[in-house]
Image 1: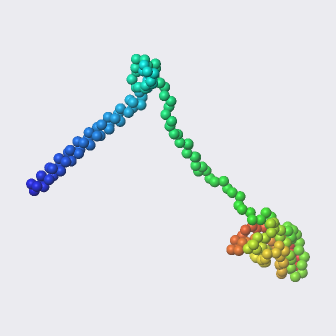
Image 2 (image 1 turned 180 degrees about the horizontal axis):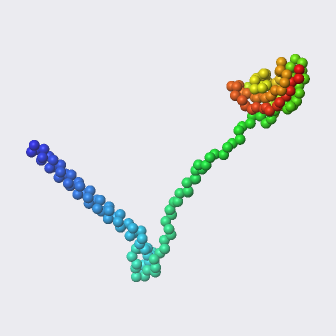
Image 3 (image 1 turned 135 degrees about the vertical axis):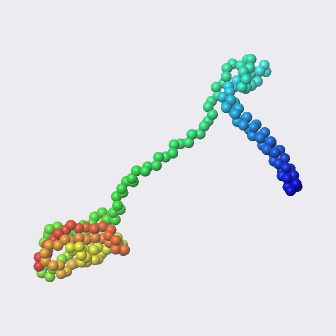
Length: 188
C-alpha cells in the first residue's frame, strides 16, 4: 500500500510539472490573442533616415509626415447562393407521337346503308403508324376490329345509331392516342 501511494505521489509530481508548463503556454497564447486587435488597429508611419532609406513603424518619428492610409485587405466574398425555386413545376405538354389522328369516315351524324351491316372505317394518321403500334376500332365502346391499315372493314353492324371511336395502342396494349365522338346511323 505504501508503494502504491508513493507511486501515485510520484505520478502526481510529473503531472503537476506538465500542468504548469501547459498553463504557461496557454497564458502566453491568450496574451498574444488579446493584443492582436491593438496591432490591427495601429497606425503605420513612413519616414526616411538621413541616408534616404525608407522605414516603416507603428511609432511616429521626429521627421514623420502623417500616418499612411493602407489599402483595405483583399477579402474574398463568396457569390450569393442560388435561390432554389420551390414553386410547383410547370406542366409540360405531353409528348405527341402523332400530329393528327381522326376518323375520316363515316362522317359525324352520317348514315351508312348496307343490307348485311358491313361498313368501312377510314382513319387519318399523321405521321404514319409507328412500328409496334396498332389501330383499334370500337363501336359503342366494344372493340370490333384491330389492324395496321388505316382502312378497316367492320361487318354485321346492327341497325340503329351507334358511337364510333378509334385508338392507337403500343406493343404493350397501352393507348397512345385516341379519336372519337363520331355518331353514325346504320340502315339495313
